[in-house]
Length: 144
Image 1: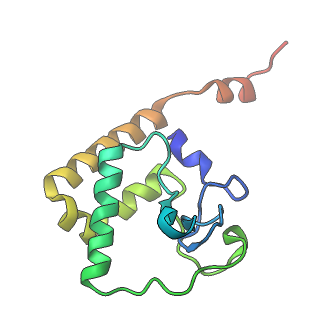
Image 2: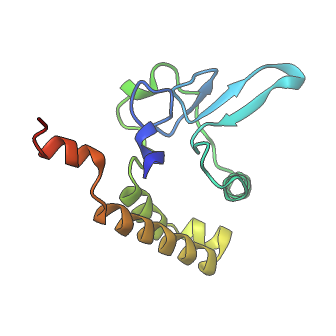
């Protein structure tokens, strides 16, 4: 649940799907030059499963090559202020919905993996929704 709290404008966590050169507001950025040129995917947080994140990146890259997708021109400016960009899910329910509707994820990982991830995410969401947090206790009970 906490993973999604970072996807807020101004946090340097990417919220819009865009690529650009050396721009910390974009989800993908080209950095460096010459032999040190690299592309960074800034979307997953430090708590992501690195094996799944790398596998998803490789699958997406291969899919783009196979379908000869054009990423378009590099985005210039502040991604947070841009209109019309696809957005990174900003909550676990949004992420669940995106994964449920993703034929790509099922092709890349298979039904068993996607169904397992969905079960885990739904279980996590139910657990969170049934918890009463310290914030709620402090907010709704008078303190003397």
